[in-house]
Each structure stands twice: as C-alpha cells, then as structure tokens.
Amino acid sequence: MSRYQNIVILTGAGISAESGLSTFRGAGSLWDGHRVQDVATPEAFARDPDLVHEFYNMRRSNLLKVKPNAAHDALSRLEKRHNGSVQIITQNVDDLHKRSGSKNVLHMHGEILKARCRNCHKIFDWKKDLTEETTCPTCQTTPSLRPHIVWFGEMPLKMEEIEVALYTADLFLSIGTSGNVYPAAGFVAEIKNMGKAHSVELNLEPSEGQFLFAEGIYGKATKIVPEFVETLLKENP
Image (cartoon, rainbow, N blue to C red):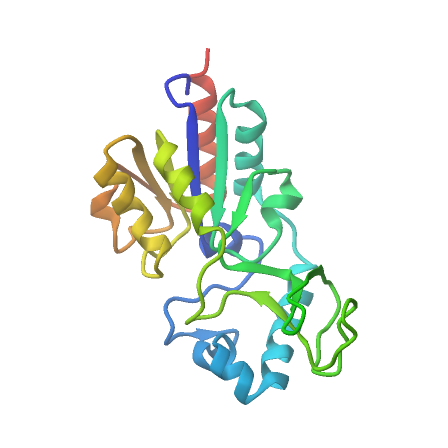
C-alpha cells in the first residue's frame, strides 16, 4: 500500500445488500415491490407525494434496523490506518459507512436520513416519517419537506469534489456497483483515460464496465473487501 497515496473508493448497493438493504438494477426495475419511475423521480413526487413519502418512510425505518457489515468495517479500517488519503464516493443513500467509522464520505445521491425543504432549501437530519403535513423547522411552511434524495432526472451532488478526487487518485476501487447508472458508471473510464491510477473492481459478479478495470475480484462483499484491505495493509511497511 505504500505505493498508493490517494485511494478513491466508489461504493454501490452491493456493499449494503448483505446488511439487509434492498437493491435495484436500472430505472425499469422493481424496488421493494415498486417501479422506480413510480417512487424515485420528481414527476412521481409531483403526481403522488403520499406514495413517495410512504416508500421512503419504509426505507428509512428499515435502515434504522440494520447495521454495517464487514465490508463497511474494512473500509473504515483502511481509512484509519492508511498514511495517505482515503475518499469514499457512495451511490448509496444509507449511513452505514458513517456508522462503521468512515469520515471521508461523499454522498452523490443524497441521504435517506436527511430531509430538504422545497421552499427555504435547508437540509435537516431526519429519522422520523415525512408527510405532506410535516412543517419545515426553519421556514414553518407546509407542504415543504421532501427526502434529501437525488431522484432519476436530477443532478447528482458533490460532483466538483468527486472530480478532484478522481483526478488525484492513484488507486481506484469500485465496490458493489452494477456499472449501469451514470455518472458513477463512467468514473472508471475517466480513471482509465487519465492513466494515473490502478483500478480494481470488487463485485458479486462482473459489471457492464468490467473490461475497463485493470483487475477484477468477484464474490460476496463481506468476504472479498476485508481480504483485499488486509492485503493492502500488509504491503504497508
């Protein structure tokens, strides 16, 4: 690991699946029994806000019942022990990286345990249910609050910080991603074109972009991620 100073890690739903959180593949797939276009787009929220709130209330409640797994813990351990930088970029809206102890986490798709006001645009930590009757704590308007989630058709968050991280990386890891949701699916192509970083895919199975990675390791995240991290740590003098 001594030869790597700036490690950038992209994580997707596959790293949290073994904690008991649902995954989906693509905008046409079912997600907890719902079509994504019915619960995860601005148009869906405008059409049926009660259904969208109900869906995210369920996801929020489910998240509070689960715990980080060995893969999350391994990345936290890597951050603590590496003498350079470790930056996690996650497509996940859960807080399992944070709960496992990781400090440097960029949530490009938002966070389910936060709410955002449509009127004053303030963002709040939020573990309770949301409804159209929930009043904004700051501007006192209603209806106002929505899940702090990037839906299909909306711009991802933290993109400037993400671009800086990708540019400075000398090791890029992609963990638990299907490789079909952009812009995250294009990160490995950026890494390859810059030619600065070694890239490794750690996934349950090869993704659509597997040919862009220099190395691929496949299996359950709770097995392959801790093993890979331990190998890195042993190489550190």
